[in-house]
Amino acid sequence: MSTSALGLGSGSSPEGLLLVKDNLAAYFREEIISGRMAPGEKIVEVRWAKTLKISQTSVREALNILSAEGFVQKGSGRTARVTQLSEEEIRHSYELRAVLESYAARIVAQKKPDLSELDHALADMGSAIECNNVRAFYERDIQFHLVLAEKTGNYILVRAIKRIILPLFAFVVMRVQDSGADLSHWNHSLEQHKRIVDALKTGDPVFAERIVAQTISQFLNETADVANFS
Image (tube, rainbow, N blue to C red; front, side, top):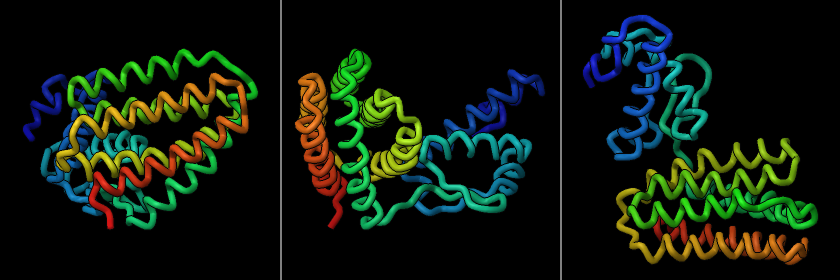
């Protein structure tokens, strides 16, 4: 990647520095999704800073963006790794999602808030399917589940669900990007999300809770199929 592509030609202004970290984050993101950077691979700040002749701070800030999105995991020191989850960790994540999100559905059905944001997320997911854009579909999928959590008004719950789904969804995108899943899979997923919204709109907390728990379990099985888990 050239330094000009990172926006270094814009100088050291705040706008230029912002462009550098955003462009570098975009570069790393595409390398990860494409598989050119493998799950578990180290991304060493100082090494990339020297290679690209940019500040280590810019690299760190780019990695912070990707960490917030779930694409990298950061530990102590100056090293990050491309997100890697074992099949057991993925299954456990879905099991915990089923517990937390079904509880969220119960609360939302009781509170009966405006659900138009979920309807909009469904429409965006449909548009992503039409464009055959897997990454966009999953971005809207994440938005759907975070909006559902936010509708509870319980932001401890929101943070807990976010911590689970961001690395999970990022890793799944890496696994399914080249899996060749046809549109019928994504259309079926969209229908399942619509089923969740329909359940919430009944205002029946027990029914909504049960439907979401069942649907998250189905998502696990379908993810295992598409991503070729054992």
